[in-house]
Length: 220
Image 1 (cartoon, rainbow, N blue to C red):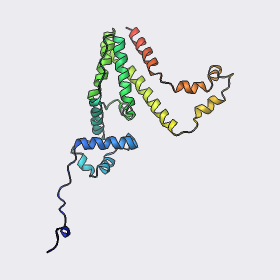
Image 2 (image 1 turned 120 degrees about the horizontal axis):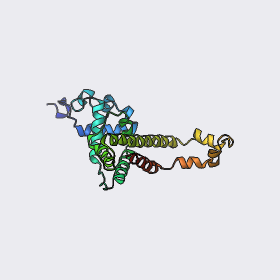
Image 3 (image 1 turned 90 degrees about the horizontal axis):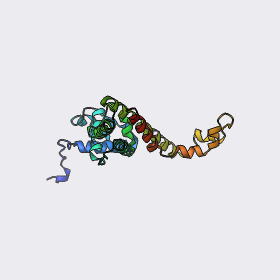
Image 4 (image 1 turned 30 degrees about the horizontal axis):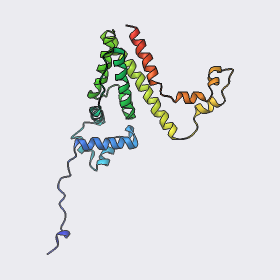
């Protein structure tokens, strides 16, 4: 009589994949390769399943990205906001900046201006509410929020790309230019010289944010 080890194994149905497993694998792919490399086929390879198996949980890549955004936003502990309108806007905007800085790939998604996590609407609501409390009509407050968002996204994108360039550990074109700048043509910049490079690397987000908020509220 043949031993049990010689009998063919039963295959049966493949193990079911949960939405939590899909999101965890998607985060792994993004962290390792970037959001541009995240495709349904690449995700299926990561999970050891067929792409069709993923469509039981997500409609497409955009749906997957929305789920990732919501999952991340749900984990955020948003700060308590002060009563003073200017400070309320500042604290909410700074919280938005810090949360996005921890996951720079999210900024690239949000700049498409269509995908967003519903849980993250706390930021939009808080900033619009702060501007209304500061005297702006609702439509102007919404525009003011958009100004803050564009400033924040721009700061994060520039810093993320600068960090990637710095990680390459090679001289930048900017460093080469400022090393031998013509003082007659560019007297102020030449006076700064290489100090400009260290100044440009400083975090000036709060400085610009305060100026933006003051200017927007002054129009009220």
